[in-house]
Amino acid sequence: MTNLQVDETGKWKFSNRDELKKLVYLHGGLYEALRLFPPVALQHKAPIKPDILPSGHKIKPNTKIVLSFYSMVRTKSIWGEDCLEFKPERWISEQGQIKHEPSFKFTAFNAGPRSCLGKEMSFVQIKTVVASIISSFRIQVVKSHAIAPCNSVVLHMKHSLKVTISRNI
Ligand code: HEM
Image (cartoon, rainbow, N blue to C red; front, side, top):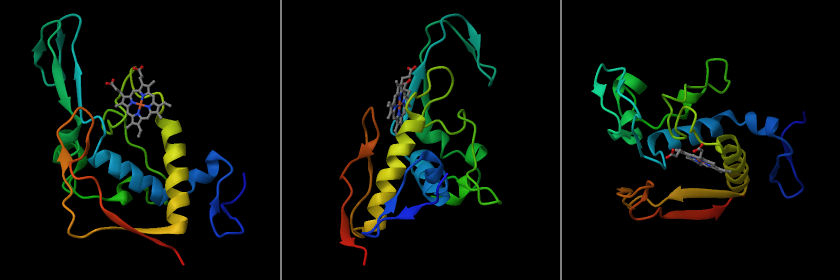
C-alpha cells in the first residue's frame, strides 16, 4: 500500500483502492449528497403472497408498495433532528474513519438481494474523478442560481447547476 502521491504537475495520483479509502471527508461528502438526493428517489415492490409489513399492515399479493427514499432521508426518526442538513461528518467516526450505515437506512443503492451491483465500482470512479478535479480547479456554485429537483423517474436538477470554475493556483 502506497501513500497518496502528487505528480510533477501538482495533481494527486491514485494507484489503488486503499488510497481512495483515505479520502474520508470526500467519502462523507459524496455519501451525504447521495443521501439527500438519491438518483433513484422512488422505488416500488409488490409481494407475491400475503405479507405483513414491520408496521403491522397486512398486504395482499401483487399490491404495489411505493417507497420514497427521498422522504426517508428527511425523516427525523430515521436520520435524526439534523436530517435536512448536509453534513459529511455524519459519515465519519470519532476515530476519523469512514462510518457505515445499514443499507436499509442508506437506500440510495437500494437494499436486499436486488441492490446495486455497481456500488463499489461507482465510488472508485466518482472519488477518482472528483479528487482529480478539485485538486486542479476551484468550483463555486453561482449564488443567485435556483436549485430545485425535477419531477422524473430519476432525480435530476430542474435548472441544471450553474458554477464558476477557476484554476487552483
Ligand atoms: C451513483 C451511482 C449509482 C447509483 C445511485 C445506483 C443505484 C442503483 C439502484 C437504486 C438500483 C436498484 C434499482 C431498482 O431495483 O429499481 C441499482 C441497481 C443496479 N445497479 Fe446501480 N447505481 C449506481 C451505479 C451503478 C454502476 C456504475 C453499475 C455498474 C457498473 C451499476 C449496476 C447496477 C445493476 C446491475 C443493478 C441491478 C441489480 C439487480 O437488479 O439485481 N450501478 N443501482
